[in-house]
Length: 139
Image 1 (tube, rainbow, N blue to C red):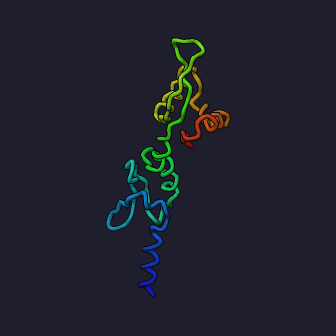
Image 2: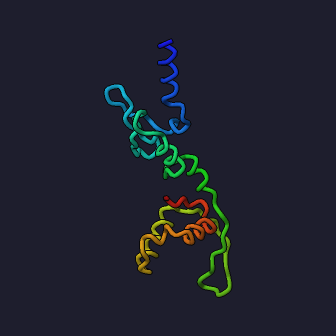
Image 3: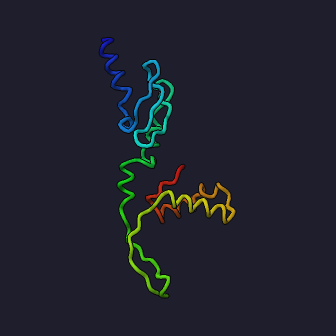
């Protein structure tokens, strides 16, 4: 019976799906932390003290998540105004660059002297969702 209990606890320790994206970090043969396989961020992962919530929340937002990368590379067709001819536009492909988008939001906050809390407001989040669903805004 004790062999069965050891086997069950061993299987239980990594049954969460999120573990396929993390590596265990052990001290004295006990898991104490986990490291993202894609971006190397480290989270505490002692099975007796920490749950897997941080791991589950991290993967969808991970900047180097391969699933997320493939979704972000889909180009959109947009019209770009021709600066030399009034009323003229040309069709071009565009791919969201999350880093540039976040940098632009930071510049808006500085230039318009907005409080940092501005990006936490429901109206801003709704606008970002409607305009740019693929940009994951941190909680």
